[in-house]
Image 1 (cartoon, rainbow, N blue to C red):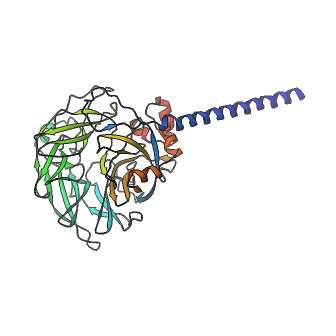
Image 2 (cartoon, rainbow, N blue to C red):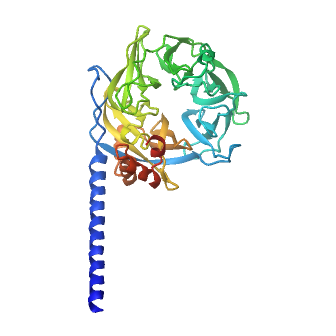
Image 3 (cartoon, rainbow, N blue to C red):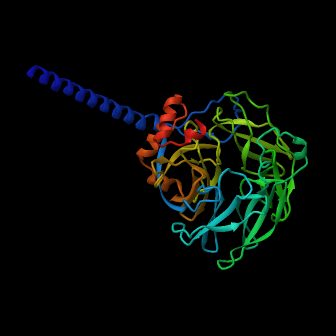
Length: 453
């Protein structure tokens, strides 16, 4: 008996020691990853990138940026289909001493009839009102939030109306495509803010046949915005009468569709106008080819589009936008770590007017890990209000959050530091892991893999 007991204790002792060694090895691997690879800025393939191409990502390291956040919308009553609501397409503004946020709200499949737009207000950008309807769609239509516009001292909300199945057809081949050849079923609509008591009142149709990405930008005497039609083709729209009428130019040329798994531009999307001068402009593009992992761009010269080209700047399939910080520096907000798709949100800062971005932050919003799941921040919008940067986004197309950070480069650097959770999920949510590990990570909380894995 003594011999058996001794063997039993010895076996358990070795198992315990082995477990300790395995745990120590795991901790060492995690420490190596969060302090090493998770600290490095993403590197892009420079193949095909023109020398003149801007912006460029020159940052070598990533710093974490903790952010205080307010949850504007979450949960909610179930719809007729028995599902809780989805939310996305966040836009922010400040008007008449109040902050406004608007977003799309729907049940079930995105981009279908019944999709509506809601809004909330705040006196300080921290505590928000309960969301309320901003606009409801016409029968058989859906609407999506498209941004705020100020004109002649008044505030307007823009949203795009559509009829569902033919909205951004994404190159789909229909059984009878002829019926959609001439149909222009999308339009930009506008409602006016009439005050807290009366809310929003429909004002006008802004532009038929197109949907904008962001509100127009002012360049000199011209207002400029990039728009898309129902076939996702991109155009530049110009207004010289304060946005009351729009002149839409020719469609942007698109290269041939790349083969699956190859680099190249596929379904260029979410266009962002960087500048405009006498018929010439630079436009940034989202690339829906997730094998490419680069932001793309194109130029308009004398009213004519040039061929799109890749940038030495990492990006993936979500929205991004430029923001001028309080100190005059240029920043870009977006999902700039393509190996995790939309699992992490970033802020890049430039010292030279947006040509090169030398600093990259990984945003670390409060409560990003919630309900045993890592919530992916996506489709951001941002505004600078004096010394504060407000960033709004959707968590996994479910919840809407607005977070704050310093609005100048020095303040951002002082506020940055080390945040463990985003670095851990930089590994857990990594799309370069083997399929079985991606699935395991998905069940462990990184739900992105169920969509994109």
